Image (cartoon, rainbow, N blue to C red):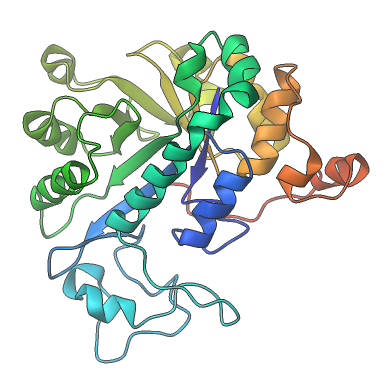
Length: 303
């Protein structure tokens, strides 16, 4: 099971900041998740909400705060970090640069990951590189421009045909559009709680490669896991019992706001136990046990 850092290590650092993704990599995440939105001047930025208000330390002046109505320069004026450690809005281009840099360094990590790859039944080399999961947010005022802009950025980063890039979305239309633009990218449909079955038309068009479920839906209907496509993406697991349950169920990709904890619990459940406490941000085996008892805070759990 691959551990995916949901908006980075987003309960330890401000979400969608470079610091959050850097910490996620240090914590042993197998992949990174981000949400993308298009600015007024056509730049893709890593933001979840329609507005900047929730994540901005200082609220925008002379602006509604709606991301699609602001330019990148206007967004860059705002602090989305902390008062002590300010951060600018991260662009998808910057995140893809970070992603490529991380994967370039994975060549020397073969020995570290070989045991986990073997236990997961994967080819050893396949575990060396990390994955990225890019979520398009719809509806929005720019519609298909988002998918075209995403393809451009993937091409620019030499990732347009990478097996380590996944497009995820609650919008079937987004997946259909992107398949028409670039059929090489793996596509995951995030299923809402009320969705009972997949649209037969999507199956006929081979639009959906895999499905995504919330932890809550997966626990109610574990029979859905692994039933459609080539894997199952589950979000967002921040508690020990959730992570261990997902590992037992054979979930393919598990999104979490605490990648270090999730990596520890997953490895423990699978009998790997490879990462020491220093990778998890804890000082000792004793404190690691105490660490697992901390109850995570709430977060918007819509992917």
